[in-house]
Image 1 (cartoon, helix red, strand yellow):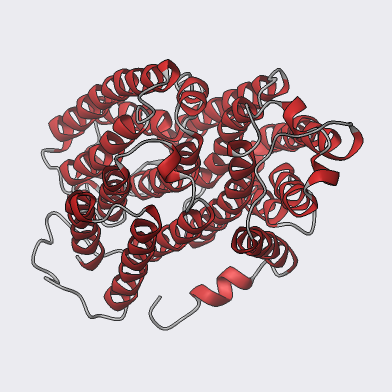
Image 2 (cartoon, rainbow, N blue to C red):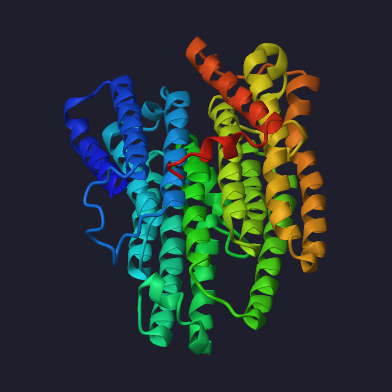
Length: 462
């Protein structure tokens, strides 16, 4: 309960802090302190020092993996807050509310990390999603931001209805909401159960932006203020995938029905990789390209669902870290490059070598070039799928799509170093340069030492 309580208290603190703290730097510093407190609270929970331990076992089930994943996301959020510390106040005047929405979304992630029944899972999804519907429309002077908020809300409400219908079908066939009881119900599974499971699976595909439920992603990411798009594309996506893998491992299958699941997952991955990469190839805006890239990256992350075990869970965590580090850099550059079109990056290599170098490494990592974290992340997820020899075709497709991704990522690099231009960028300060280079170093270190994450996680607490 530590991380749930601390996340909720942090959101409440920011609800009132806006009345008393007007300096945006002070609010950012407060957010970092609260995030550190959440990380420490999670570590204490792993060590056995937990508030209200074993008090609500039918609602919350302690999950070491979930708590560690939450701490990783909170740690990434600290880096996100630091890199974008001077960007929040440019969106609008209600800074306290912006931070409050972010921290309330963390409440949803904290519950997703350790839910014990389907109702708690539903509440967690809503706690994660509703703040994002609001934060998408925070640019009050932009019709695109309002449109993004409305579209996100309407599509989110639709997926919520699907999720509730799926939960009701599972309850109708098993007679329970408790995950532990559902896991022991295998001998008497009914068709209604599998229909409910498919509906829950579909709803989570919407949340992570997987095709053919991806249609909201490009418009919402493009219309949302870029500083918040960064958060939605990284932390929120990571939290959604955390809930996805935990709920998928909770549903039992027999051998016959697992075959149908594999077919369904293969089709979803194929559509997600193809639509994401093909859509990214035809964009003029780097921000829109990153939106379609996010869809393609979700396709690679879905490979972990083929065989959910400790290796798959570690691969998902690794992918989330590598993708987030690269996205922080690229979205920061987009936010400070005029309209964020490809042409706006022309000549950046000469005008701002540090930013251009950081963006280059981030793009190379997203493309999956060796010696970067992105390469190891793709290798790990594809390896999960390769454990089943029947997945050879989709593995080959994944490799082809990874090569296709190089074309639209390298278009930005070509603009920065091989095209003349006078980029209208905002020169970052020394602290930001340090943070960008720190992210670059982490990307390279994780690519050179692929078992670094395993070493960090291999502790007695785990």
